[in-house]
Image (tube, rainbow, N blue to C red):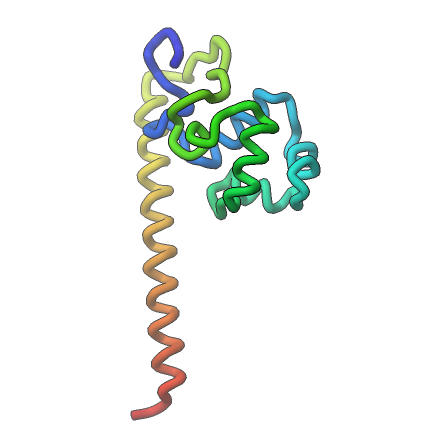
Length: 132
């Protein structure tokens, strides 16, 4: 937490991907460096940081050790984690509102993606059945 009580990497402020990127940066590594040490492609790590996918348990454990944070912190924002940005002051009074709106948009996009996948599956099943 910062002096103003705001937890930059807490569950209300950050996603798994945000915490991965924050921990990597706090450890002084580029995406390419961390990916190489994990034995994965840079695009895979980028996907994790953008919340497009998540690592398997073994890679999650390796990553936590490499960036010196707890697995629980990466997953939930609670526990031993990366330091918050030093002396960083949000730009303008609407900073927290903008972050909240972005989280809402991200959640809606994730829900719509899942909805689209379900509809796509229904269409495939209908096509497999053929005409009635």
